[in-house]
Image 1 (cartoon, helix red, strand yellow):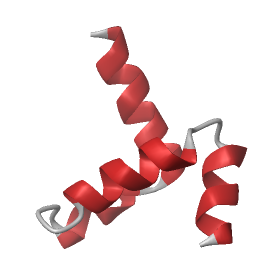
Image 2: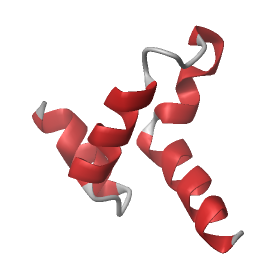
Image 3: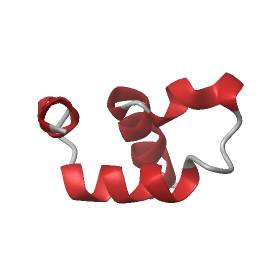
Image 4: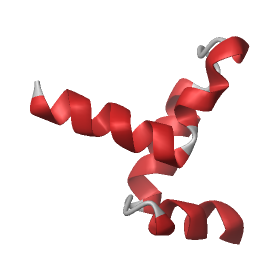
Length: 52
């Protein structure tokens, strides 16, 4: 758990927001696209959604 939190912080992401979103989405997320839920990819997705 500490590794997940530290990785999120290193990527300038609020760990609680990231974990909550990932846990809510992971059951329905395709296994072939799990890399999209990694902190550095998630941040890019969130930044893009905020800009739109």
